[in-house]
Length: 451
Ligand SMILES: C[S@@+](CC[C@H](N)C(=O)[O-])C[C@H]1O[C@@H](n2cnc3c(N)ncnc32)[C@H](O)[C@@H]1O
Image: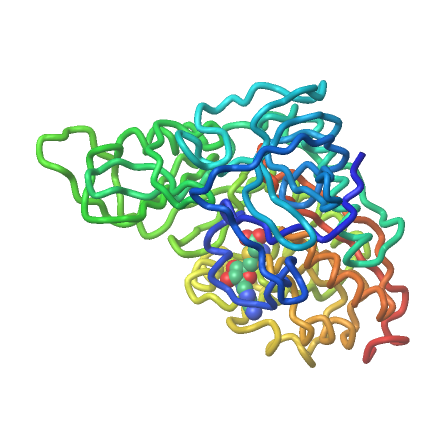
């Protein structure tokens, strides 16, 4: 049921796992329209309906069908196994993008979306979630299959050791960070996916209640800004609302804003997180992910661990009590400053502020184990080569983009690492986004590395 046979179209980007992650450049996702022929998006034109049998599921949250002319169709808001009518929204020589507008035969996994704004991103729909119409257990199963499929197609792993995705117990009210748009009249909402029109939002069911309370406190009451970032600490109840808001006269209910940072806890460890620094947006599932990554990192009893793309020191703080030495590498100054606070008490941690591609090659001491958690663009070649050249026996690769993960794993495996397992963790229920932890090992790095 999950045969994605061709390249998928360039995914819409309904929101980065954490927008702070977007700030960093890296190798671009390849143009999936390919061969220089660009996709033609059909905006504000009469939509052409086609009837489809949906037979698969692809990265980006699309159900797959086949058009009468043989082109593959990437259908938003469908479920594999359904017969639907979909309207064409974009066309390329080898594929079509479409949106399901009528379900002729429903999948048993189809459910009624919880959110009043759920849908393709026009009219009164936001477009930020792609999967609310699919029962949660099936979402998790389909996303696991996407990981397997990406590893097969991009990484050329015929039978990758992908474990079933770890789903979230309560897959709603989880986002600790939302970015809203503020209109001149004070209305607060989202820019709709695809059309980029403004949609006023009263409540977002994937956001933590505290985020929704802040939204209600600001709605219609502020002016002078176009952007509003609301972050909360799920375990600490701290709030970080940026920018410092100005208030319309006569409006009484106000929220505090302009805080420089918040504090959040993972597995009992407290972190300071500055306004521009990355932090996982799903605190409860971050604890699942971090616990798993740490287990696998410490399994081979390393002495020297490198935490690359270390952010505010998320992994380093929890690893440090178990090893001789931890070296963190982080490029962003604000996250580096947070890490100084978060890791300051830990005498066996050395912090490096800089580009991993510059800091890691030839690092002395060479690490026994590495945790890498790059942005969606994945790991640069120079970094992969530095890992291969090092004495590292174990690599734990945390990724929020299966396509670049697959690409990078292939390079590491071709250089002598064994891919032990890939554990997807659902950090983004109701959306198409996928997070994975991949574990790689090599018996004796001296055969391959500098040793
Ligand atoms: C996905 S976040 C992970 C942060 C951290 N590991 C965590 O879990 O909170 C990626 C981090 O890598 C940093 N980063 C991006 N490109 C980098 C580079 N070339 N060198 C060093 N750090 C980089 C970003 O600033 C960001 O903090």
